[in-house]
Image 1 (cartoon, rainbow, N blue to C red):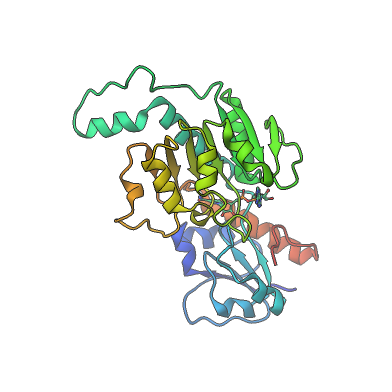
Image 2 (cartoon, rainbow, N blue to C red):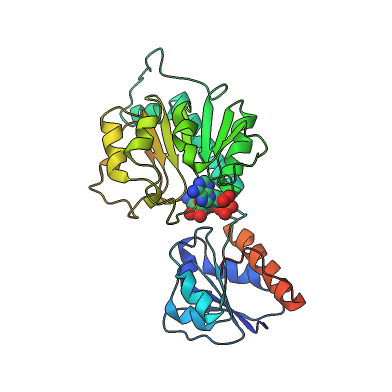
Length: 308
Ligand code: NAD
């Protein structure tokens, strides 16, 4: 493979200013161009993009500027021999900090005080409501970049971290690693269950009524993975029925979350607009990943984060 142009698709504007990204990508001796709908691609082209378009399959290499590439038709890339890479590896700090912030907010009740502040109310919690993360258990499902970013930070706050991993192999800062077939056991004693796995055929709907039922009634579900890993109707029913205490949700089956969704209405549900990885440095992080692969192609080395 020989890259003669890096095309930056306008869709990257969903997560960063394209101009800053183009600037950060220069310096590898390959011209970088902004492209939009209707652009055609061929040999020598690399494309950096947020989403998929059929025309991209004619390029040599396509880089998805997100970690989750579940919206890409991987089989089409494989059939065409087009390399597809993703952006896993860069979201451990951002998402790790966001998840800790969700847990601290819920435990220390900051969301309730902020809600009361809007009405200028000096609203005290009941005596038993506030708790500390120190000593509480968190179960992290998916122990990749996101999951480890959460585990490291939760452990530093004195939490007991358990996790779910397909191999069941040990992970630093995780006291017990369960395999996915033991998910109910893994979540049973946790005050927080954090979903950090990719959306795949295996994980779609992985958290539904039986799993929510297996959780403690004072537990919170945190989803920073993808909306469809949770059955949203079952989640609303569990929240309504008091089967769990609440949730922190960054991702949804439909985004933006429709105005009529009941998930907006719960005091104990934090809704964030798919921003757990947001940072004003995103263009630098992704440009470093793409740049590394440009150098690898020049050296004839295998690509980092290749998924097809
Ligand atoms: P990663 O590839 O580093 O880690 C994912 C881990 O999940 C891997 O270790 C994988 O083996 C594991 N996994 C796969 N199937 C599993 C299963 N059935 N049970 C348990 N573990 C399983 O990816 P990452 O960078 O950590 O990102 C994970 C996912 O989080 C992405 O695919 C994406 O959908 C989502 N994500 C969301 C945001 C956001 O802004 N909310 C940001 C980054 C990533």
